[in-house]
Length: 331
Image (cartoon, rainbow, N blue to C red; front, top):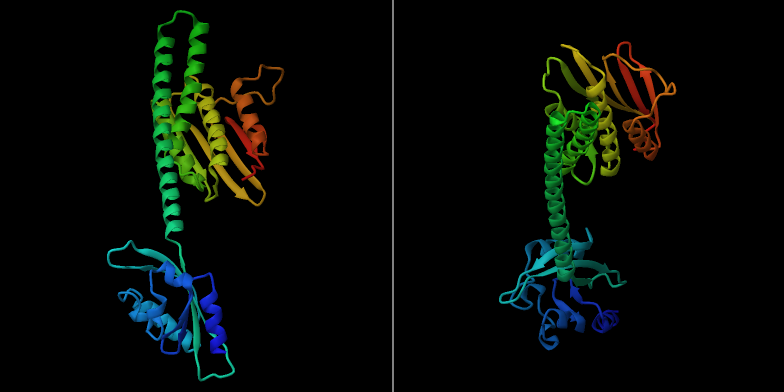
């Protein structure tokens, strides 16, 4: 049986060793010898610890092999570095299994070694490229946000200079739109591309809107009430655009001539399938439904984004103020 096992090991195309119960080599495949630059004629009857220049004498590997020989464990995908003088380190994945014989006095263990150095290097390079891409994306988002804020500032200055009231309204509306995108872009620059916690995301988003568009916190405040739901970046972007559009619309229209006490609340809660995003204010309110009135661009944006999320939009009288609900959002 030992001769058969040795013949199988020696003829294997995989890097294999056949060891006895004292971790002494009985045989090795030519692949093992070629991979680790060992002379097949010199390794028989040598202990594993004596192979090469002693680089296989690794305490943790020795302990695992002794446990395998005793039948207490098996080595399955144990990863280690093979450190050799004058040569680059090898990253190895080792597996070892005790062979079962009728003659239990002769312990035989097969040790397989796979060199994954190139694979690990490729994975590291891939991870480095992903990190670099992420950093470049964040830098791009910062630059876009800054550029949009500059454009918004120019639009607002132009609105103050023009004589036509109609032109002034158009410029101010354009300013609000650009600020809406700039605010969201700023949040995207600091948002990870994986899971996004909505509580932090909405709080930061509303803080940015408040800083850029609310000049007197005594007159108007903006708060968030959000549960611990997390979602992916694509959904969070759509929800962020909806919140930005609704909040800026409330800031513009809900509080004409309000001296103090204005409040806008952004809330989100996930209760089973009925996920609800709401933006409410205690302002002057608005007519329910279209009532034949002209649909604004903001309304179209909110409805289009809500459709993407599989949600429905309703507008309700908050008494006082208005409450816009986006219900059944698909997270």
